[in-house]
Image (cartoon, rainbow, N blue to C red; front, top):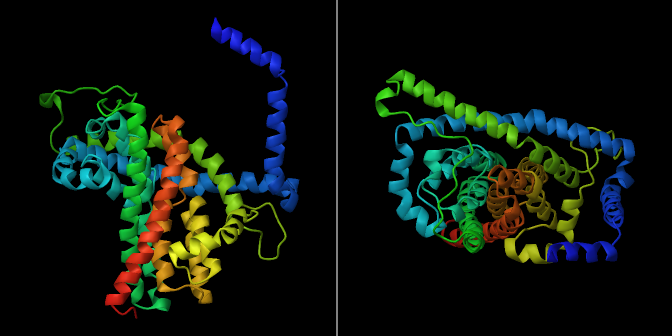
Length: 394
């Protein structure tokens, strides 16, 4: 009854049409930042073409990763490898990250592929049974911190042709900085989740019911391997479909905020055009970021801001900066840490938290990972400073 009276008072104070009017105003103001510089037709075409580009070149790639990762994780679960990893790595993962030892498998999987790969493991019942309820949302932060690690590190090492052998040390510092950032991000997320879930509740199992097959009825030899691979692959397909809405909507907008106009300045409505707002914001907060990261030029500030939306876009900026001779080895260390730790998390966090059915904690996950990425960059910078005092960077 009190709830009904409260709604009645609210409706008298605010007529029903106020909410849609306010929404339309905010909606039009948001899209005006794209329409004014780009034009209505070009902005709409770019949005659609960018979404299609992401679908064909990113989402299906992620789905392929999810299928392979799901197949491998199911195979590892079938033969008890997940249980073995949990036993062996618990002494390391629990003190550092506050997570079960089995989560190390997620770190390896995402390092070799991309952020959402850890979701395939999270949807595996054998994997989940090692977790408490409060630890499940933190998988988003842990997996994202190491996402695209191999790609980012390999890209940085490829720059040694122009920057010299010191790039290897820079990449090492960046990877170590990423570990620090992952610890900060995951620990902060666990702090919030303990308040929400407590520490005793077990992790909820995936919606798909588990069919218990007696050991005597399981296929033997190669058939057992084949069945595990097929079952895990099916889970990967389901996951790939589940993340499509979040990735397309969020990533398309973030990329339009990250990329700039074509070289001639004339918008054509093609994919990957935008207003370059995020790199411009970096210029205004440069007085904060420069002391933290030790960047040699103000242009370098565009890389961490761009990495928020797309690690691939950030890597392309780095390649251009190296060609222009405007970055140092210290910058490479920081770039490695931030590009890996953030790895476009604004584009994936929403869909990842949705897939884990933890939407209400998305804001906290983003906040924790923002802090974690900054910690990764700062750690990489000071690790490089320390190592450069001991080892000459040539």
